[in-house]
Length: 312
Image (cartoon, rainbow, N blue to C red; front, side, top):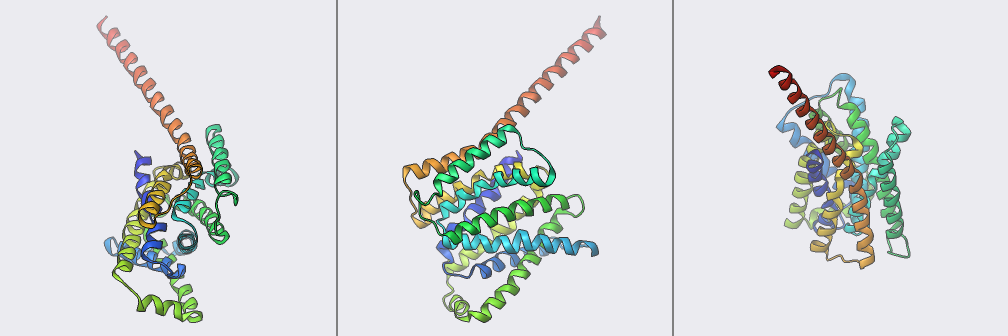
């Protein structure tokens, strides 16, 4: 059930790329990151006020800088430099990096199923992102790789904090602190390129407003709320495998909003990546279901034995 819930924020996150390119074209990525994070954090603070304790500010600032400020900035660079479909599908590679992180940092070796699925994912990604297959902006690809590392590192920190700090405080203040960092950086950027920000203000439209409401409300306030809540109830690797909805949203929104289309081979590679991201979780769920059935059968047999002993 948690995996299905994890697909909800993943789906909304997958719409970020197409929605941004469709409703907020040419906006500075730093400004978009600040506008996405800070209002959502303040909204959540208004819904349920919380204040970190004295010893919690530093780690929340680090989390906000990695998980929000850096990640949001990179996401909007991807949104403006890569096709939305490719951005969504590319983020399916997160489980591979999550497994490597868990192995190297937490000494938790992945299962053979996760390892084989991860290798297959890498192979499909290699062919999909190969220059001979599709022409992609190297800046966007670099941003994608960095964003994936931010997800893995940020998720690890978030999960570690779950036993020390209430999840709502983590959610609210990482958005506020990360948004504040982006706001300061955006202010510095505006001092060097004021014409870009002047153009944003002068040409602000209803379409821009709809895009901001979508990004702030659904993609951030709702989705990050579910994200932090779910991380306290499932592993980081399991959560990332639940991100299957991300590429699906990217593909659909890219087709509907931007008219993106690819060759049959490219779509086949995308589907291959999506399927490989599902395999470990599917096998684990099947094992869990089988063990549950065996446990129920054993309990039924023992109950019959006890009742038989009482009767005879």
